[in-house]
Length: 239
Image (cartoon, rainbow, N blue to C red; front, side, top):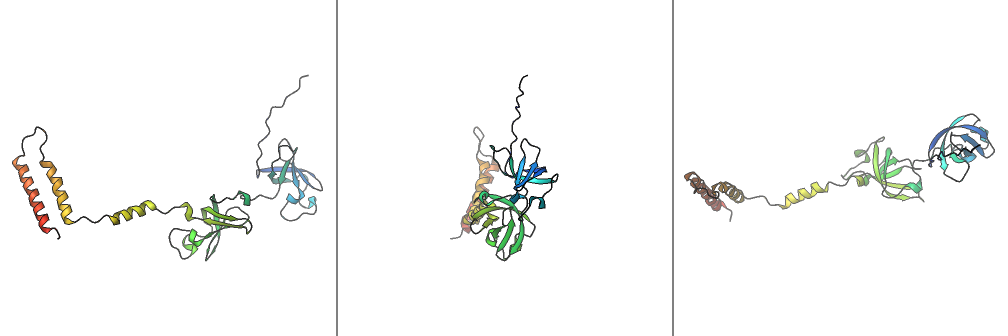
């Protein structure tokens, strides 16, 4: 009898991945949960809920369906390390300076806005980081409940502080500012310059093309008009 070779690849399991399983066994150390994969899942007693648990039976019952998350990935282990405590979307080690995060404004103070980004604590966007424009109150830029994007300016794990900036993601319109500055640097054209330019444009029609006959009387008249315009402009030119 030939041996059957199982070529089914092992499932790809990632940290924080969510499953719904059934409790199949309870021990002093925790619970065993069937999540429908090739290996059982194990939830340590400390991971049954956020509050301390003295007995496993106080938190779960055999046959109960529970939501679990992958706590740690151990490919060499014969079980999956699970937790029934929903993990944070962002942990301290995952938050980096310069990251762009999405969150919800949950609190406003005179000095800034607190934004829930899925970390242990909300991040703080100082009032000076809410807008490029001058604002007197945070309410002038954001409201409680607003979903916003922000850049992480600083992460202080010791103090459990996250500093955010909304305006860092929206640079000042430099192109518009530079264009306005350029316009301010260009002096306004004088009446003489305008008249001179107009005369030159009108005079382009008086130049005969190659092989064309000499200027007709009409064109001579136009040239004369041009000379008159220039003469008047020179007389009126400020000294």
